[in-house]
Length: 401
Ligand SMILES: Nc1nc2c(ncn2[C@@H]2O[C@H](COP(=O)(O)OP(=O)(O)OP(=O)(O)O)[C@@H](O)[C@H]2O)c(=O)[nH]1
Image (tube, rainbow, N blue to C red; front, side, top):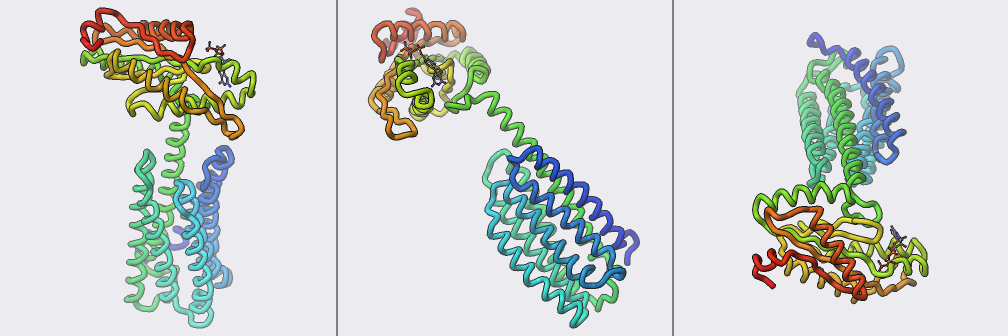
């Protein structure tokens, strides 16, 4: 045995790592129940710890516990970590679970045979390493297929790690086929020590990568909460102010026009009064969705107040903004708003106020104030109307109206 690769010492390190990270993940999962999979990963680490305790007692306790049970538990530990990771990243995990359970059912009798019927350490190593290799390569492939989003870097990293573990275990299996009969596992050789180190790397990498991507997920959720209106899923005022400031600077710099449409559902109080607040909420959601679906991707839709929405139209001049507002007005008034409960089919109309500005003249507050003024006019003129408020000079400059 090469110095530094003492199997019992490695087993103790695995035990400590498994317990520390397993308990840590359990506590994490308790305070963040929305992270599905964390409890499973924690269970996996604890199983690995238990398996390595039993393995560390080789020659002190019966072979049934230190060989057959220990390996079955370690295999279950890796399976639990795999299922937890797949669940956490939203990948299909049932097939992996069934596949791992099948391998486990095969593993126990094979180990029993090569321990008590024909004691053959090489055969046991070949079998368990092949099983780990298949499991790791399966996980690598499944995690690699994770769709492109902010967490893909983590899944790609894990996927490559599992692919490496899979290759190392496959190599160990092939190596052992060619190796002379191993007399004592505790003194087997460097490749077997390396395979125990793999478990340490596996515990550490999966533990910190999962925790790290959980932090990113939380950060993302906080950003969404801070910028998105929870009811209508449109931007809130805070996000609008930030995006408007950027858009205004960009348009000023490039000399582009910017338009604003303020829209407000007509007589919305009656909807609430007649059908209740819940139906009112559903109408708001439906109204916002209809606006969103009929705008360009780079237009910004924000909930400006109760039932009032603002549309920021980058690179859009006054005549175009008026046309867009008119299109939206017609769309809203033509279709019925269907509440979740199909019993409510409501005829809804909305009023629209439009303003626009150009290049260096753009002043965000003035733009919103003008759109608000135009909206007031639309309401005063009988509702279900589009009104604009523009500077005469701008209209002449654009030469459109
Ligand atoms: N259901 C629901 N109602 C809301 C929400 N926010 C504001 N409202 C209601 O929207 C209604 C707005 O009423 P008003 O400002 O009087 O305006 P209106 O009835 O739409 O009349 P006009 O705007 O003049 O056409 C009020 O009854 C608010 O309670 C919300 O999030 N959900």
